[in-house]
Image 1 (spheres, rainbow, N blue to C red):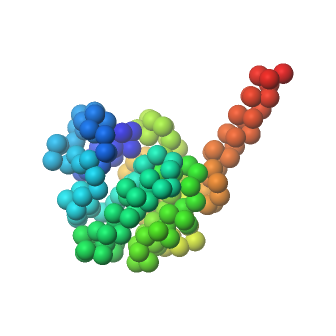
Image 2: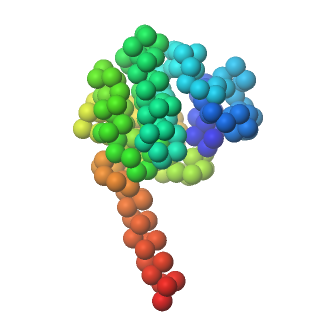
Length: 182
């Protein structure tokens, strides 16, 4: 909901997909999204004509694959998703290359990690994580979108587990737990 609110606050036309009706309704109200742009699944209508998709499914590869990437593949094969679409994944731990490789070859270069921090409409930082397949112009476009349109501070991260911030936090969490145990 924070990512939706951020894009809406910055003047973007937003479509929202959430399988949970209550979440969808609440997000729609908070982000001022019209009812006709709220969807409980990634239907053809939800994706037709969009320039960018930011996937923010919970950190579960199987769920992301089933509910997003397999469906995008189907829509691409049916001509609903365009070759120029930008696709970002708001993941903090799943390898970006793994997700990119689940897309049709023509879309793999249009994909990168877009790790927003919660709540996305308040937090200033975004980690952008290109895979080895991400095209330079896609990386540049996500950078400009993040920096200039969303007014985020951008950190480019390498496609390693936890990227930058979570890798640092694991050390801090471990230290805290050790201190608490002693």
